[in-house]
Length: 379
Image 1: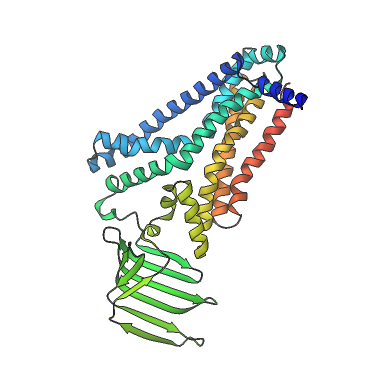
Image 2: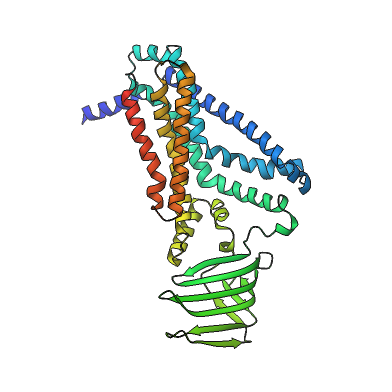
């Protein structure tokens, strides 16, 4: 037992941060944040130049533009390309260390290549932690504020209801669908409301009402009058009209009527998980879209470790072509990873591939590439 504890202590002690570890971590993070800062400045300049007419027409103040739009846009943009920034940072400063013979000096001093990777992964863990915090908590709130700003200031008056499509279809239960036209969020009113039930691919009942209102406190839809059409097994229909007020509870809230691609971007991790469970229970055919978002929030940050492994393995030795060759090969690999992730997400959304497999497949593929390059790296 004493020998085991001693071995554990020696392992922990060997992983303490040394001067060379702090040196590498400092270079890693400084290069990473410098690259992000440079890209952010460039993106803001080009984005502002593109949207300057919209900003002037909207009469939004500089403070509203900077705080309401760009302050909420920057975290979203940074997190989307955090892996690329990490990769560029690793390639750039590690390649420079290699050409200044610093890597050779470190390995010659008795430090193993495995131990050399330790400070890189410490820095990667720090970046991954920030990325997860942004993805799971902060970015959804920022997206909500950014989308609200765009709706208020960056659309023409005739498009002010862009938060909702004019024609909305939602599945509220297995074989039950709702059709809503011209929903107004100010008073939770739909100009036209239809609830259809299917059996064996055929409509068996259709309830319709004009001027239907959603009562948030009750979770119900109401209308002053309605009509109900039913169909028998032979396709014959019967129509019933009533002037008695309709008040029906269905599994559909006003928040679910918004554009779902925007809606899921504004949900934190807990809200998104509950939303997926609710939509799965309804039998919604859009569950794949929501699961893609949920898995992406974890897969992108975790890719930081994989891209770091590839970056160090590529740039830790001298090759003909210098740093430029390292950066060129590295960026090609990184962009191919981003493109593959995008394709995988689209396949998952279409239902061709299960979302978890599609989103995590690029990580496993590039992890295999990283392990191969690591074994080929100089030891």
